Length: 502
Image 1 (tube, rainbow, N blue to C red):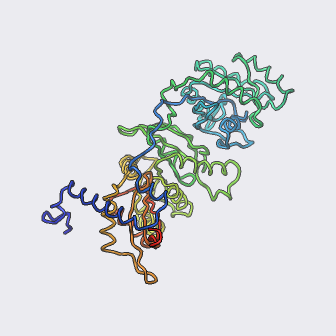
Image 2: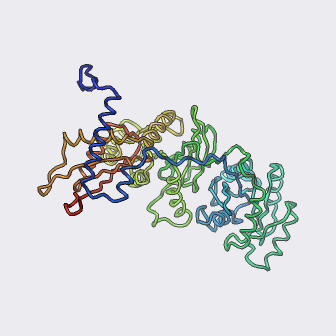
Image 3: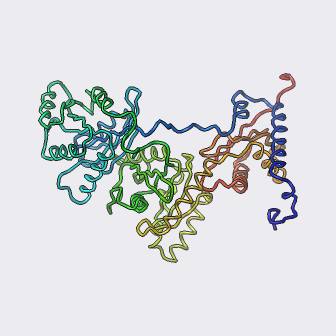
């Protein structure tokens, strides 16, 4: 029977207030002892920092939304990259590389807005192309204004005329962009687009940047200060969840199942999703922002073309997220790719849930071998919650929300400095660091430097071995939980002050 179970144990004789006072006494004593050691200004700032200070989210309201639409291969994604000032949207000299609507945060002359790239809009589209067209129409509905891109070197086509009709029905302000106007001579081609009846065509070269500043000035003129479409792409607010995993593992299927409708293009071809797609989804009483990401194929330097940039953007989506659900195909052996994706999450310091998808296809023999693989390959992430689910049937998808909430609570957890030092004092007294070379390093003081994820800094009189750090991490988890979040422990070795410096 543990002390916790024993009603007569000493633990029950000390109330929370008295325990807090004891912890504070330990902290003050250790702080005083630190004065005997050489500390930098950075050390002192860390030790004296007010705990719990977090940057507040921007509460100014949802950013205005600009949707970029047009038929395939007119240069929409190139223009998006030009506006963003970085290579973000997938660009390849093949029609239809962008398949879903994708939201980015953009800025021009100090004003921020949400920029939505869409797949090419086609008349009489069928199959996957029909769903691409539907996504483009949804993007227009969820926009405050629309940038309609036409290839000036080709002129207005029947498809362009059909897009104009769709845009007129929407009633949204439209900025007509005549793209691929690379020099003065091509401006006559742009002038021909007056005939579309959308007002002035703005001549632009998305490739070279020509005219992009003028068209952005016009964009800011028609965009409201705050979005009037309900913040469909609002930053901040809902907790952000990245869906990660290797290609064809079921990320888009899971997103569609959670949404209760088809939000993302799903096809039986690995790698259908090439851009991350942000979606607000209400599960239970909470709204979440899900990011469905491009499948990671192989190491970035081995990928080419659109897949290369998709791999980079997967990392970018992870950086924007707070928690990641990594999908693993339960029916196949855990691969090096699976392990690499999980390690990406840990390295990025994001909360983590591992979901074993396609569980409905797994027999008893496969389950046995999967358990052995998990024990062998994923021993370092035993702290991550595990869900066995089926994106196809919806089995166990309801378990994701409590795990998400637990992981994010852990990710946000801050341990009071007094409690942390009192706990470490107990640990060190019972299991001191091994003596090495006749010396035994001593833990002088510890503080939690930050949350998201929890980061601890330990001041010590000597080098703390990696094995002992892992031991400390394990005991921290046992005491304070931290289920679903990585925690980081760094050690600062400080020398005792010499007599001459007193």
